[in-house]
Image (cartoon, rainbow, N blue to C red; front, side, top):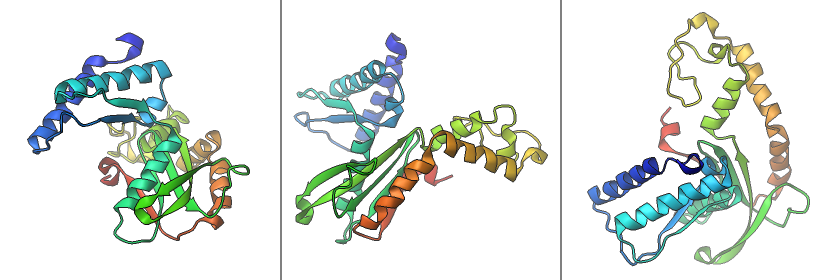
Length: 239
């Protein structure tokens, strides 16, 4: 496993993905240009390992789909991910109003909304000028990505604050480990809301989330539309 990358696992996942497309009757043009993008899960690992992982996935997809063009692949930045969230949500809307977007993922959370002017010299936001020809004008989009603050990574960090007494946050039978996969089998008596709240608050302090949220609040008066869309993977939405 060069650089700790499980190439065989990646190839198997890509094979399963292609088989699911075939099963659903999705036909991929062999002359199509494929774009393979990875997000926060690979931003959290070493760059060389991340590059090898995404390259392996792209090469396997090209082979399975018999593509004549070499796929374009990259690990996108958090701010690119936030911008793509905003574009995807607002291009898909049937109405003309534009919504801000909050995207809860497994390893990061992204925030994006359109603003009236360029705040980039004053606040820790990236600003994009998006030539939104589909809606007839251009927009300034402020984006922020909170790496390590997605659902899985946040729970892992919070659990790390009290490794010997995790049960304070998880009543018996509720999932509570880093992978959200093992139930807490401790007695219900260990659950304590106040102690849990203290540990969760410590996570916010350690990650400096308060400062990030303050920056967002400062920028909100420039937000150009009142609406918000919160999006997440179905796995999190179903919990």
